[in-house]
Length: 225
Image 1 (cartoon, one colour):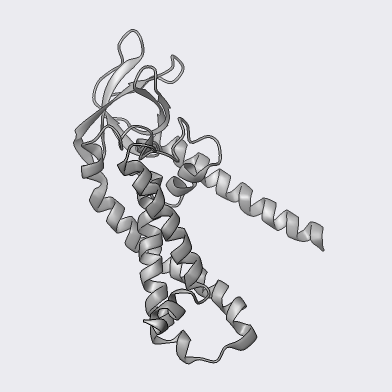
Image 2 (image 1 turned 180 degrees about the vertical axis):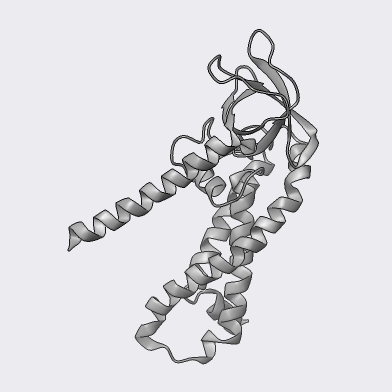
């Protein structure tokens, strides 16, 4: 038992365990109705926040809280196995801290695809509950089923769940076309409808933003020199 406690309190495993404890506390608050499942979600993907970051990483269609829980759970299990089987047998000394940071990054990188697969499996179940399928749908691709009416409203289905129907509210200059693939980018809570953009336009914008981020880092590096 003492060895188990020492392993859990070792660096960097203690960071993952601590974050997992915070997530467990959050789910207790959800269970008693003091916190919503879509706690991290916003009405739009435009601003930088945790939910939009998770969407950009590939965690779409489920609340960020679920994706984060899966990521931390897998990361903690992998980190524990690595610490128990390898690291505790090594005399790392002062190298424990820098190596621990590298291991922390590697553990989360390994846990990411496992978490994505789990979230993909949970998508359909999340779609069955309105508590987990409003703002969490931002970033999802839909297929337009009909031409918009006079008020700009039309129905669309999720690309990977044709039974789930959403209502799009388009602008006059951005008219939806039947069978067109579009990406949900904003939730209009008062109407329970979504703003959307053509899929290719969304992908192009995402690519530009990534390039801009790389350029800023590159420019920052030259400035430092």
